[in-house]
Each structure stands twice: as C-alpha cells, then as structure tokens.
Length: 528
Image 1 (tube, one colour):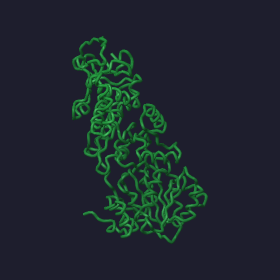
Image 2: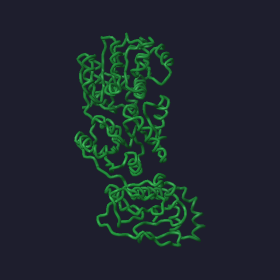
Image 3: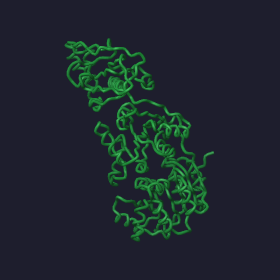
C-alpha cells in the first residue's frame, strides 16, 4: 500500500502543492526518510540521483522552519555549483506561496549579491563548501541558529577533497541540531564522518537501480588493438546516432580534446567541466535541456548537476573505477518508463572490469565491434530512405512536381530520382568519412582473388549490381566511395535490423583483412 504525503506527516497545504506539481505519491526514499526527519532523528540515506532525495530531506525541514525568524535555520551543502542551483530550485518550488525564503550561495557569481540575499533574510541556505566558508569568514553567514544540517552527495564532496571544509563548517554549527547525510555510495570515509557528526542516525537505503533489459540497453564496443578510443568513437556515434547523450570522460583535458574533435567532425556537442565559468555552465545547461546541443562531454564531478529529462544515451568514453559510479552514470537514462542505451568503450585490458560490472548488474552486455564503413554507409542510406518516404506524404512535394515534369521529357524518371538521392546523400554524408579515415573491414570466410580494374561507362549511371553493389553516380561531385576491402557488416544487430533490406554499397567479398584498411576515401583506389 502506497502512503500519501499527508500520511507521512506533510501538511495538507504542502501536499496539495506537491500534487499540483505532479508529485502524486512519495518515492521509496521519501517514504523512509520523511517520517524519521519529522520525528527529529538524524538520517543517513543511501540512494542514487533521480530517486527524489531532495524532497526527502527538504519537505520535513520546510514543515518545521519558522517563517517569522529571518536567521538561517537550515543549511544544505552540495559538492558542485550545478547541484546547488538544482537543489535550490527544487526547494523554492516546494516553498510555494509561504513566507519562507531560500538562498543559493556558490562560487562563480557575485558574492556581494549573495551577501545581500542573506541580509534580507533566508531561512534555508543551499551552498558549496568553499563559498560557505568564505561567507563564514566574512561574518556574513552565521550558523548559530541552524537547527538542520544536510550533506547532499557526500561521497562526491569527499572525493573532491572537501572533507576538511565540511568538518570545519559542521564544527561551527550548534551541537543541538538535526543532521542528514545523503550519498550514492558509503565508503569508509563516509562512515567515519557519520560516526563523528551524526547522533544515533537512522539508515534508510534505496536499492541501487539495476539496468533492466527493458529499460537500459547496455552495449560494449571493443576497441581494436593500436586504436585510440577517440578514433573508435566517431563511427560508433555515426552508427548509434544518439538524440541526446552524456559522454563521460575521466579528466577535463580529455573533455576539451574530445569535444574539439567531435565539433570538427560537424557534431552538435559541447564540454562541461570544472574549468568553465559559472555563466558558461548555466548557458550550456539551458542549451542542453532545450535540445540546442545534442551531446555533452562531461567529467563525473561536473555532471552531478546535469539532470536532463529523456536522455537517450549515456556513453562511457572512459570506464569508471567503481561499479557504483557506473550504475550512477547509466541511471541517467531509461527513466520514467523510457528506454535508454548505455554504451561503453572497452579496451582489451578493461575486460575484467567490464565483467565485474556485468556481474554486479546481473546482466550481460551486448558486445559489438567497431562499425565498418559499409555499415555506416548503409545506415545513412536507410535513414535517407526513411526521409524520402516521409517527404512523399508531405504537402511540399507538390511544389517540385513541375520540375520533374519538365525533366522527364529528357531523362528517365528513375535516373532523376537517383540523382536527387545522390545529391541529398552527399550533403548528409559525414565529412570525416571523406578525410581518409580507416575503419575495420569484414573478414571473409572464403577469400577469393579479385580484379581491381573497371570499365569506364559512358552512361550517366553505372550499373553496379553485377559487381555486388547498388547504383553509383560516375561523374562529378564528391563521388560515391566503395571500398575494396569491405563486406556485408559483421554486426547481426545492424544487418538484421528488420524492415526492408538496406541498400548496399559496392563491396568486395574476395579480399579480406582483419586489420583496418589503408585505403583512403576520395583516393583513386578508394573509388575503384
């Protein structure tokens, strides 16, 4: 039986506010934590992002705050500016039309403005450790009236080196206070902090989310020997074509370098890490949520404040060190009943780590090889085919029929359609595929010799079907590339993806190599 917010002890007025906001029933962590906090107990909560823990600690506090007292009565510490902004926004919504006020204090914005907010009065403060200490040293923030203290994302706070700052802030708060600590993981350092600063806490735990097959499709792409992950990511992104994606990397430098590479390839992507100014972070966050940028390359720490609805993909460019971090990452997709995809780039020496993650989630990952040129080309042709089918049902089609009527007197109708498709395909083909990049090729079980010569055709179109391919324009333009060492796709998921058969590019089944082809796109050999 699911309890209502009122049955947990939340006032009717606030429960109605929550219902108007779309919160019809409390989550697991809220059901466990709210009654304990309302009863005055210290609480240790272990739960992931997206489980509703902000409401779990803020709703009981808001029920007990005194609106007539302007002094700071509750303080919430978060590891990052983004999380502070997010928590403050949520609390401000929960306050509604009451006379309570919340203030957010963090680096990257005018400290004078934040001092003015504190002077005007704020019963609850959400802030980062560095800015909180700065305001304490200035005497602008006083904790003598604090009755509630919350540490949010405590494990990240400690991993970022804030342990001394946290202890300093806690030591300045009154001993007669109620303390809550929330963390995705519970390493020994967190336990030590709990034992030192919390008074006989009640522990509430929400089982770490497992990546259910019908919610999150977990995929591993195995990086070939002598390949870099940056090189492998390009064809993966072309094949997967994520609508929205968070790409996790280990360092800020990697984030910057990878973002630059993807932008050069024409992708809608930006970087998100600690070196960005606060204004730059906020602008990017708005653009990402508004779908003005499709992909964001981020470090784990910076991404704590990135919470985007309906995220289609999470990509582990760098595998995390801990299984808990992996679960936390992929839990950002596949929410609210939606399906999501978690992609991991796995090098040979990381296979044991991959297997450990699989055992923890009790789910075997789908193991794939780096997409070949033939697979990528077929993917783009199939996408173009779908766009044509959609255009055939549109109203704008009639505008172009007179042009066809004029040209059909001189050209064959099939040739006109093929030429239009060639133009559209050339304009949407990834630019980096034309730059001489080499990709894996198919291994043929029965290698056969092949003649590389071809006859020149005087026709506007060459008939490639006799050589194992489709139609190819023989004159002008950038030219359709058909690589001499490619076969059909070694990925059953790609080649047997349902629907009508995908158009094939000219391929050669006669020669095979387990190593990447050295043929360059646009070269004479590549066009043969």
